[in-house]
Amino acid sequence: SRPPTEVETRDMGTPPSASPPSAPLPPQERPKWTKLALGAALFTFSVGASAAWVVTRANALEGPPVQVGWPPTIDARVLAEDIEPLRRHLETQVRRPVKFSFAGTYQELSQQLLAGEVDFATLPPVLLVHTEDANPGVHPLATKIVGGNSRSDGVLVARGSSGMGSVADLKGKSLCIPDRDSTTGVLFPRVAARRAGVDWDRDVRLVVSGNHLQVLRDLVEGRCEAGATYSAALLNAVTQGVDVTGLRQVAITGRAPQDSVVAGPKVPAPLSEQLRQALLSYHPPADRPGGTGSVERISGFVAVRPEDYAQVRELMAPPAPPVPDAAESDAAP
Image 1 (cartoon, rainbow, N blue to C red):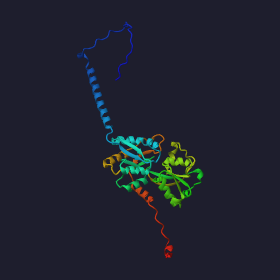
Image 2: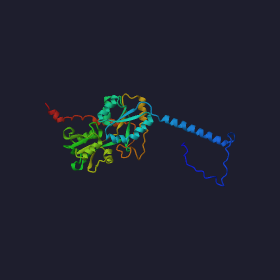
Image 3: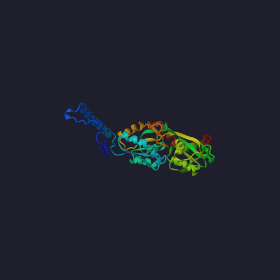
Image 4: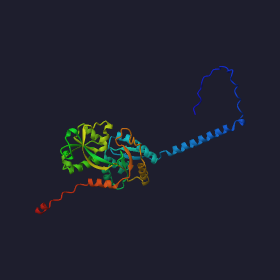
């Protein structure tokens, strides 16, 4: 398709052995194969151009953007890079632009979803329960699979110099948490502390770090003596320059479903179903589930299991008041 290259030539004469140039054939005497070749070339070009137009048309993104909000589980910059392959996949499936946004707090994300500022949101378990209670019209679509697991362990981590060996040692200590609505960062360690005889409200001094990666940074830098996070954040923190070699895992505090993508109460049902199918069809390459240096490592999605959230609700319920001893009841006036 490029124009012929102009090359400077010199008249060197006709070599003795050269034959005189052949006279061109008149149009009516040109071989039939020339006409056939020309027709075939034109047909091929026409088919190729039509196919290219069809592909381009099929891949076109039309309509208003689909807004998906994300919680501050890790640094927004790191999260955005991790989930960019997912964003591109969703665009190709729903044939509309997909925009990801990152809330400053868990509660802010819930409010954005309920107000219709985002169409969908990825909610950790406790936040999902709070959001459903605020508006039953929200609809869970799919749960993340991270590194092949649809569930996540909450872990209590401490500085090696803290002397902590169990959850009971939280008494009188400072604890870094990611957000007050975090499942692995607050609900699980609070329940574990209560079972170990530690009063969460009086015996533990909380330091709100803002996200799980920052919990580990604050712990390494000495802002707190212990930290509550989830296992994958601890395992992959080194990819973000957090040296966790001086930390030790004190206890596994609980196990919960990974975050789930939820449709807002104002989202049309067809769009919700379209996004649900797009999420369930997401299967990134096994060697790069979330990009180089990934912390999230989203490897797919599965259907939401209601029983998982029933267990979370049980843990969120306030403990029942102690039953008075029968002898004490009889002795009461």
